[in-house]
Length: 369
Image (cartoon, rainbow, N blue to C red; front, side, top):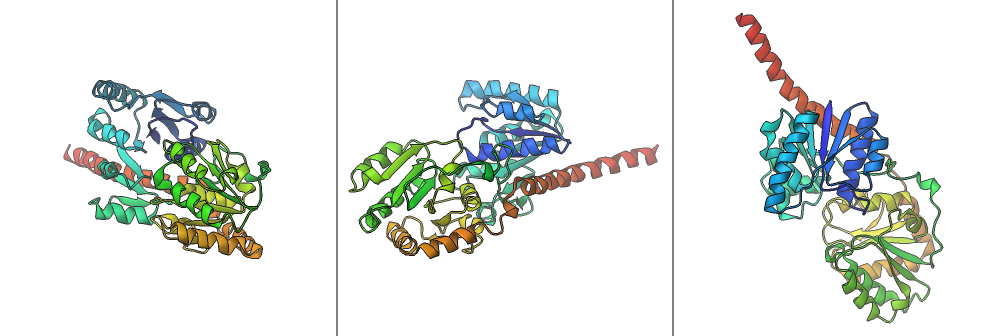
């Protein structure tokens, strides 16, 4: 089987979509498939090469002139690599592969990560649409994507070829009790609500510190908000960290206060690190936390309830330990190997669907002669 993954880039910037694509490419090459990635490049090119994955340069920047160039380049890639499967992980890639399908005889697969984006409906151009959670699948059906096309492959990045084993990381020397989030600095990630919740509890828990790990366009807004509280010296903006495991291993309470979240990959890593977890009861997050078995759920955009939940935990160290233990149960299903096996099964399903009619036509021609 020849598999081509398309993604905008392979940069090491904490993009969950890129991380999943890189993981799949590496594991599929390890299984003996011929695998390539088409993107504008990035730091993960070296890792891909180490795993025997070819990389084709493909700039999908959305300007009219560049899209014309990308179309020609895509045709060249298809002609050279001749994939059986093209797996597009972002919207531009699936549109390109869908429109230019006549360039080669391949089946097209897409994965929907950011379902909340309007453009996510374009992922339905593919022959099979992978949803990273049941919540995403249900949403895509409501938006008009045929249930026959949809397959759910729950996300997972544990045991990723991008990372060391969790045992090989060391916890950082953080202040305790430690409250941490690892998220892009976007409003939709609920950073404002987390800072507000911390400002509510800060006086009653003078030893508590909040660590915000991540980068993004709204960081300056959150920094100004933190400075306006009475606890600015206990709110730490750590920026993007390529290996946030050191923070997680030192964390008492991990919070993901997102307004919308297709799955919440970072929660699987927080679970592996043994954090007590508080997260928004929205979209795919309940699935990631085993429907309240592995973490506490709070309404999104509700800083008061988030603060109350943090108070409940900080007031009871035994309760924190209880949730730390529960977070680390039932983690096997979040390993990348399971994600890859289920994804490859979808590829095989498409190839069989294509091959059977072709074989039947060949037999008819033989019988006709």
